[in-house]
Amino acid sequence: MGFYGNGRFGIGAALTAFGVSMLFSACGTKGAKTEVEPFAVDSLTKVDSLRVGESVATCSLTVDYPVSGNEALVKNVRGWIAKGMAAPAMIMPDSIPSKVYDGIADGKVFLDSVAGALMSSSKVDFDDYAKQGFAAVYEYVFSAKEAYQTPSFVTYVASNYIYQGGAHGSSTTSGAVFSLDSGDMYGWNMFVHDSLPAVKSIVKESLMKDYFKVSDIAELRAALLVDPDTMPLPSASPYFMPDGVHFVYQQYEIAPYAAGMPECTVPYSSVMNMFTPAVEKLVVAER
Image (cartoon, rainbow, N blue to C red; front, side, top):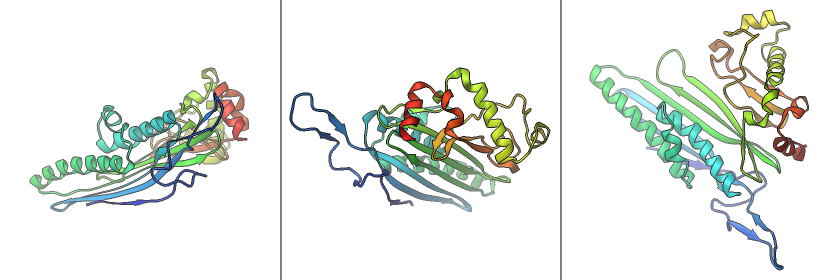
């Protein structure tokens, strides 16, 4: 049995769940500009649980689900949320979840769908466990939240935690930046491709000083599972926050579980000349 809670809307937008109207049209003369309603979200939480014999599964899902704004922006944010939240919910190796869920306009229906998939998948496991005479505890905590918004872009951050037995659960974090004007999504494509080696050097230096708090490569090498000389960039996309560009590595990606998810924030000024022209405009408009 599940329940919902809902809350705020997008920053600076005092709107109800379904807004007033989808468009505001400038009045009067020929060629008057049509303005799109500001980007706004419905903050929703869905909690659900399942018990089969002694096995128990719980889930807590939280999302800032777009309800209005630029059509392309709303579509792209919903699709990104679906890919990030529904895929781990289904626990499948393919891309079916995003195809199934990214067309859903109602956030409550979306969360019902994800929670339903989680409970159905858990029940299949638990029915089998009951036949074998043992029990398990599953826990799912997924969120996709608006983390930062400026007049030119909005940043979303998704966090997922899954526990299905064993010593500890598995956590992931990812982010994305969306242009409020065009709806375009930016991750690693925010950088000019040829600049990525320089970006990697900046990230490595920042991790040394700010996360691992070591002073040389030898100490960094001892803290990692990979060779710092060939250390890759994070698999998760970088994203914008008020203090700069945020980079985060997943569990075990470069360091032991005990090291957590190594992360750093690089000031915009350090990478401004590495952005593509379109992204540089977004950042300059915000500064």
